[in-house]
Each structure stands twice: as C-alpha cells, then as structure tokens.
Length: 84
Length: 504
Image (cartoon, rainbow over all chains, first blue to last red; front, side, top):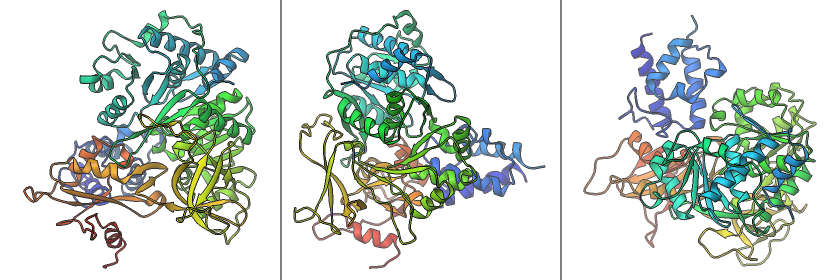
C-alpha cells in the first residue's frame, strides 16, 4: 500500500466518522486533536480503525496524542507498525 | 476546624516522608509538597496577593499543580483551576470574570492570554521565564510556613467554572466548609487510611477531582494523578491499577466502560482495589452489572451532586436484580437535606417525581459576582423520582443542560459559539444518542447575504477556539431556516423529532 493510499483511506474514515462526510479542508497537515476534529473518545475509534484496517502491532506506549496529531503523522505511524 | 490546606500541613508534620502525590513524571512526599506550597505562598505574597484574592492555576496535572493550589490557599486566597485543554479565549473569560490577582501557568499560555486588561497580572511560569519571573525563583524563598491568614471555614477556597447557558462559563464558589463536609463524609464512608492510594482521573477544574485529592490528604494516603492524555489508552489505565496498587477508584462511568471495552478491565482481579466510586452521569446498568459480577467483593458507590452542591446524595450498589433498570442516586449525605418538589410546588411523595432541591453544608457560597446562595435551597434542575424505599432516582433534566461523558454542557454556550461564526445565522444544538455514544448535533442556517456554508473542518476549528473539546459539535444539519414555535422560539421538539427520524 502506498502512502497516498493509506492517507486516502484514513482521510475518508475521518471525514465519514467525525466530519459528517465533509472532507473539505482536511489535508495531511490539518491538526486533528487541537482543532477538535477528533475528541478523546474519537481517538479510541480512530485507533481501532487503523489497528484493524492496517493490521498494526501498535505498542501501548505509542498510543500518544503526538502520534495522531495529523494525517501525515498517522501515515508514518501505520508504516512503522505494519505487521511484516 | 481544619481548613483545606491544613490537611497537607498536618500530614507533613506527622509523616513527612510519606508519599502524597504521584504521577507519570513526579513523586512528591508530604514534606516536599508542604515546602513547595509554602514557597509558592511566599511568592504570591511578594506579588501583593492578599487573603480573599483569586489566583488562577492553569496547568496540566502534576505535583507542581497540586502545590500551586495549596500555595494559593496558604495565603488565604482562592484558587481557580483552569482546564489546560481549553482554548486561551475561554481561559481569558474566566481570568477576567473572577479578576485574578496572579496566574500560575505555562509561559507560552501566559504570553497569549495575559494581554490588554490582563497585561499587569503577575504570572509564575512553570516552564520558561516570563516577564522577569521563573519557577526557580521559588528556591530563593523560605520553605517555612507563613503565619496562618485570618480565614474561616466559611471563606472561599476555590472556584470551579462550569458551562453557562448564556454563553459564558459561570464560577461556582466553594468554601472550605463546602469541600470539607463532603471530603470528611467520603473519607469516612470509604474507610480511608494512610495506606490508601486514590486514583485521580478527573481534571482539576471538574468537581470529581476534589474527592481524590483531599480524601487522600485527609487520611495521609496518596493520590495518583492520571494525565490529561490518560484516556487515550484505556489499557494503560487498567494497568495503572495494578502497577500503582490503587485502592480507591473514582471516575465517570464512561471511563470505566472504556476500560472494560477497550482496556481488558474484566480480565483483571485488581486485587488492591477495594472501592469503586462513580459520578457525573448515569451508569448504564448492563455495564455496571458486568463489572459488579466480575468484582463481587468490591464496594460500588454511585455519588450524585451538581458542582454547586458537591456530592449531596449517594447510593451503595448492592446485588443488582434482573428487573432493575437503573441505579438510584440514593439518599442525602454529608449532612445535607434533599427533597423533590412537584410542579405544583408541593413535596413529591413515594412514587412521585419532582425537581431535586438541596440545602446543607456542601451547597456553594454562590456564583462568582452573583448574590450569595445563603440558606436558600439549591434547585438542581434535575428531575428525580422518590422511590418507595426512600431512594431517589434520576429521571432527566428540566432545561437544556446535558452531560457529555460526565461533563456539564449548556447547549446555549455551544450555540453562542456557533453564532459567533460570520457564516452562521441561526444555531440550535441537540444531543443525539445516550451515554458514551451521545453526539452533539448542530442545526444551522446561513445568513441570507452569505449563503456559502462553512465546511465541517472550519466549524470544528472555529468552535475549538472558543469551547472545551467535549463541547464541539459532532454533526451539523443545514436548514434554510430553523423551525420556530408560534411564540418565535426555536422549535426544539420539531428538531428532536427530525433527529429521531419522525417526520411531523
């Protein structure tokens, strides 16, 4: 899966789950937490999604707000912890 | 009678080595906490802070934050905990509303917020230097206590800001007595001893945190501060119970449900844990039943009370029968009196419903800047039913205040924030769904001259600059104009019907 494909999938998921399907203005650098796009409960849903969808082996200590701050960071996280 | 800050001073004399506060990055003994609080009190005194003044403590959780709150009390002033996750604009409203004489915060936050009318407010920065002050200045000050200020238990101890219906947060003023009446009841009820380790899950600007901190200090036990990001990892929260050997857990039910569903709580014996307290919202009985059956030997207590009354009723959960559909909020505690009043003004009898009223030692002094509460009973706005066994059960609200994961939310405050957007003409916010699945839905219309609708990202960003995160709308529905009742008010019933899929 290319970075672009991962990005597209997560972007679509976030738009559908947290933005009522409206992805306008959501790019790879849009802050997700600071701007309230994803709240603390939403983070759980987002984590479950990326864990399941990309089969991540994500250690508990990596579950930090910094690792979910925007789409770019999430793509990097997926690449780092994808099961080989 | 003891004042709130004297609890720590007393334990520091008795057992200075004992641990008072722990968190991810910090451990403070009673001796260390006491010394740091005294230094902070001296710094505040040097800035001209006087007994009766207000001092904002605007910090993430940590040992220093607890010391700051203690330091403020030691000079006879009242502390105002400000949500570290709140946007600066909301923090400013709070600092201005109660006219703080000093702020203890991060340098970058002070830089952004202490401008214009707040320019001259002295600030003790916790991290970097700010306007000539820095945290290390405290080291030059004596750790010996200041002379005890002339304060009584009826004086203001702290102010908790809650969501206000008019669009501005309002400050609930709590006296030493208000807090201590609750803390003593709680400590005695859970049988607290110096061996206890309390969890602190709630943020400091939330009234649930009062029990954790002060019940620990009351008995000489310790409290573990769960960081603001702690909820991102329910598994981490579950592991914490064993790792820190917690004995008393207190949180909103949402957090416990999250720990059950995503953190593996139901696979743990949690042998150290003795008592589970919860408050802030109804605990859905199917979840509580699972937890209770998993841990049959632990005590479960449902505490109830708006910020204005601390905790005023409690219910100890016994065996849950199959026919039981909800957990009662219980009977009066802490020396308070509670009763329910029907629409016709008479007291509700067994089986009847009415609004719950509270009077007694835990009821607040009043809202900051408003006339004092005095001996008047506090109307909670909560509709309850008096059960045949004398317990009260929560039925619902009589106004537009809702709870989102235990946090109080006035829909009017969200609507005001939405209306501040130039492309939003009308706004009505409703809650859709219940418990952890509750969503805030905004019904919006555009101004006739600006028909371009802002994107969801733009709306959320706009709200995030004005509201705490739990108050940001999850969904919006655009209308040409909002439905109105015959007297011109927004027709919320019609909107609610639309949400529930009924076409009127």
